[in-house]
Image (cartoon, rainbow, N blue to C red; front, side):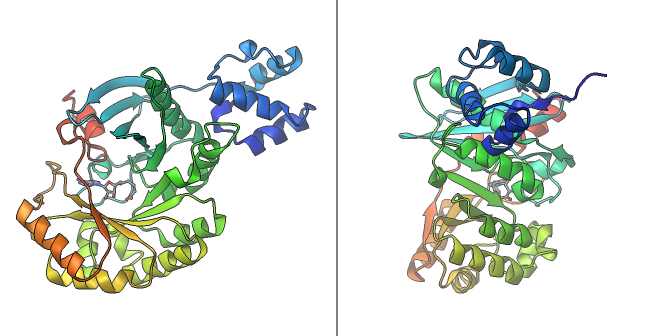
Length: 350
Ligand code: SAH
């Protein structure tokens, strides 16, 4: 019978070390393998020349390298690049590279599709297929990092803001995070990584206890339950009071980087009342709000805010002392909003 092989890029340094130790190899072997895979970017065990012959054979018999197949690459006029990938089971995910000055950020997908059906987001429209493995998450990062290297640039930041809900694939996302952060591996700085969630309160609490050191971003988008229920059905399971008790816990335990994402939708969530509610909700927290104009998705009827509406909302926030930054929408001409490119692939439009 053929032995079941493991995807090498789904292994954290700790799990690979344990595996190799149990097979009788020294403590440093896993570190050497990590170095080959992530620093030297070697994807053939036989070319890992400082490993013993026996270890190379053992690795080949027990592990394999998965890869992503690029289906489409689109570059936006503003410099962001969107990659559509096919996975081994012929499902599709996308990653986006967002260059900003010296910073190169990759936006990663965590699932094929999404279960949460936010009423402004293209990702949920095609339903949920499956969770990504740690390697499928890590592979997106590696692909973009290699792409940048060929252009003499470096991947500096990672955000989990692509397709899927990272906390709905908690175990695999945490493993991928550990691989991405690993000094013997990709070694992206902790403070340069952000996980974004639609607000799964129990997972936020678990994540706070994990204390990995990466930033947390909450997709808030509305400041009262009756509005949030309309655009984010998950709010009916974890309403704002529950979400904020988890967020407060996170903020007490992990003093760094808490962000709220707030999509501005015309005539919906940008009134003076919304500002006052927001002010009350974030009181006492160490936070920043990212304001993003709604990026139109054709299946939904929402309108992006006019520049007058944006200006007014920002002025009110300022007057009330609420901290925010206004984000330029990126990649609009390449369907940069979460899940849009994958949606077109399914509709046969690309
Ligand atoms: N499920 C996670 C991560 C994916 S969404 C989460 O909810 O946070 C990543 C970000 O893209 C979220 O803040 C989401 O609200 C935003 N987004 C999705 N569709 C958008 C659209 N049409 N316009 C602007 N931002 C959008």
